[in-house]
Image (tube, rainbow, N blue to C red; front, side, top):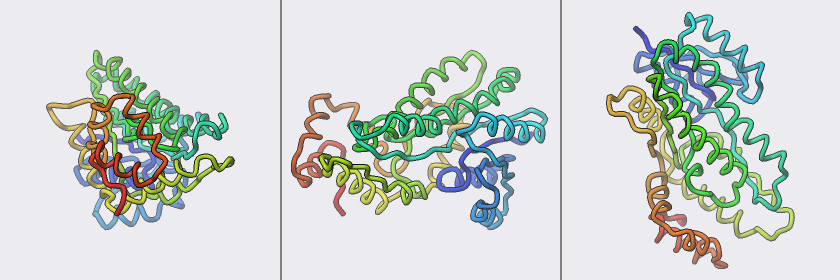
Length: 291
């Protein structure tokens, strides 16, 4: 019996890699995209890999779009979805002082509420069958408050909390919950994530350090197929775990932050010199931001 998997945000980066990789492993894959007409690269890559990814138009930020998209999927699969990969997401750069609440709400609506909308469409069937897996793609920024990305960080921390609770909620029904926490991975999201809404000019250092972090990450960014392989392992292994770290910087930074005192965390942000900040970041997290 084939495994039926749905991957949201399948048009680029981790979502595209995951859709293609799962299809190559024999899954019947439905990839959700906001526009099928703009999914030509996905279709070309699937063709090159000799696999099929069934495309479904769906906007995770919209209730009715999610209902309609999953109605199409469930009609085609006799009501069965075995694996849901909640990957669709957006970035969000801003310091808290200068970030309108509307931006927090917009980012949260995609990164958290979008995943909730999707899982609510598949969980009744998974509960009835007493099997299934939900994979939530959070971020290293779901465990570490990445500088000058307050709305993004808030959404990913919320996504982590929802996911951790979800794992206990679904455990009695035999449904696996997986949290994947990528570091910097080759993806179009970073090319789009260039906003620096520094209206006061007071936060020049924070934005410089933000973009230096991503410049260093993109210099050594991980192929999204590595994340896809972790996702496949997570939903098929007989010894599952709740969290998986993957990609540049993720394991190092999450491990180091857990060992770092709150006082030392705050002190890191107090450096006036960029060089002192980069040196301290390297010493504490094992990640070099200069290249």
